[in-house]
Length: 76
Image 1 (cartoon, rainbow, N blue to C red):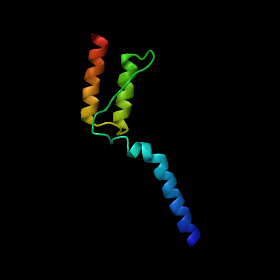
Image 2 (image 1 turned 60 degrees about the vertical axis):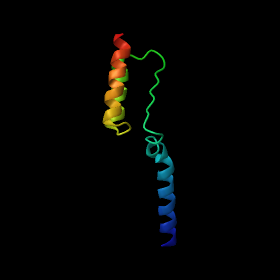
Image 3 (image 1 turned 180 degrees about the vertical axis):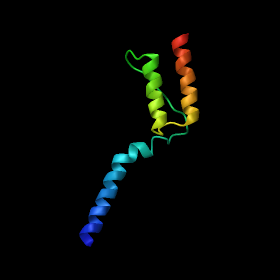
């Protein structure tokens, strides 16, 4: 029984460490910064943005605001 508890504790902490970037990605005051590098197209950036929203990494508000900025960036 003691070995099972130790295994469960180790599994929990391993999952916590592995998932910590996801857990804390929303921390920091609510301002999301998106940088692009290289030769990305509007389509690729919009797809990446949609993927982030679908995975719950960003909120609906962040998605909409960033989408508007990206479209403005590529159409001006």
